[in-house]
Image (tube, rainbow over all chains, first blue to last red; front, top):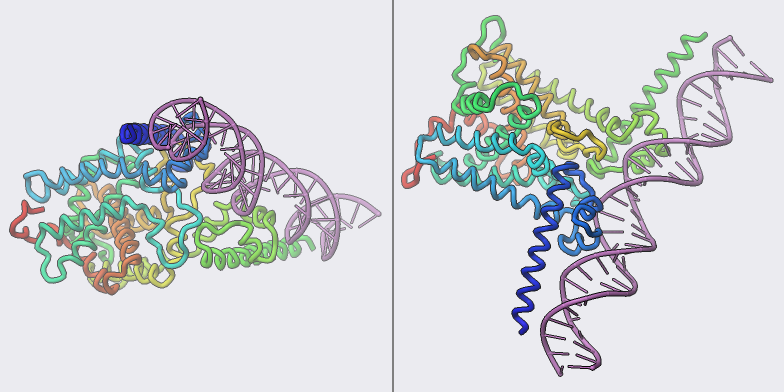
Length: 213
Length: 213
DNA sequence: ATCCGTTGTTACTAGCGGTAACGTGAATAT
DNA sequence: ATATTCACGTTACCGCTAGTAACAACGGAT
C-alpha cells in the first residue's frame, strides 16, 4: 500500500526529528547557545548534512528547539493570569511563574533569551530582528491580555502594548540580574516588582538631604 | 631625554588607538555588530595583528568601543535625573533621553545592547555574563540614584536595586519594540511608560465582560 | 655600533556554518 | 524480477572567521 508507507515514513521522520532535537538540547544544555553543529551531530551519532536536511540551517534548528520551551512557558503564564483571584495576586503569580522557570533551568533560559544571531541577517534598521524572539512574544501576549481585561481609556490598545512589552522587559531584566547575583529569595523579588508596578516609585517620599528623585 | 621619548610614544600610541577605534566605529555602524576584524583593519588601512596588539581580542576592541558611548549616555541620563523639577518630570526626562538616544543612532544602540558573544566564554551558571553590559550598568546607576533619594523603608537598598534593574529593563524592552514598529511618537511612549510606573496598572478599572486582569 | 620598542607585514592554524557528490537500503510501481 | 523513488548516511570540500607566529623596518637612547 502507498499511504501506509508514506505515513510510516512521515512518522519515522518526525520521530527522528524529535530525537535530533533532544540530542541538540543535551548539547545546548552542556555547551551553551554557542554549541556547534558538529557537536550536535556527534551527540546524535550522525554527521552534519543530516542535521541540515532536517532543519535547513542553524537558525532553523534553534527555532525548532525554542518553540517547545516557549510554548510551555507561555502556557504556564496564561494559567497564572487566568486564576480566579484579584489582579495583584495574579500579577504576582505570573511574575513568580516566570522567575521560577528561569531559576529552575538557567541554561535553557539563556538559550531562549540570547540565541545565536546569524551573521547573514538583514541589514538596516531592523533592530528588533536580533533581539530575543521570546521576549517579543511574551510582550505581545501580555499586551493582548491587558487590552482584553483592563479599562485603559481612549488609546487602549497602544497603551496595552507599551505596557505589555515594558512589563515583560522589567521582569526579564530584573530576573536576569537576580539570577546572576541572587541577592534575595524569589518571593521578595516578586513582591518588590509588584510594588513597583503598583506605583511604589510614585508614592514613596523623598529622602531627606538630597534633591529628591 | 628618556621621559620625553616615552611620553611622546605613549601619546602617539593613544592617538593611534583612538584612530583605530574611530575606524572600528565606522565599520560597526556600517556592518552591524557582526563586523569582522579583517574589515575593521582594512577600514583603518592596516592588517589584523596590529588590531590584536592594541586590543587583545575582539572582545577588548568591542569593550573599548562600548565604553565611550556608554559613558556619554550615562552622563546624559544623570543630567536628566538631576534637573530641578519634580520626580515625575525627571523620570519622563530620563526616559525621553534614553529613547531619543536609541532613536537617533539605532546602529550604535544595537551594538551596545547586543554585542557579539565570544564563543570561548565561560561555562556554567554565569547567565548574566552574556547579557548586555550596558543594561547592567544602567540598572546599577539607577539603583544608586533611587537608594540615595527615595525613602523606601527597611530593605531600602534591596528594593532600590530591584527597581533600578526593573525600570531599566522596562525602558529597554519597550524602546526596542517601539524602535522596530514605531507605533507612536516618542512623547507618547514616554507618557505611557511613566503612567505605568505611576501605578497605572493598579488603578485602572476592570473591563466589563472578562474575568478582569 | 647596538639595543629596544613600536609599527607593520605575510603566512599560517583551527574551527565555524554550509554544501556538493556520492553510496546504501528498503518499499513501491511496472 | 526490475526499475524508480526517497530518506539516511557518508566524505570531502568551500569560504569565512578569530587569532597567532615569524619576520622586517624605522627611530631614538645608550
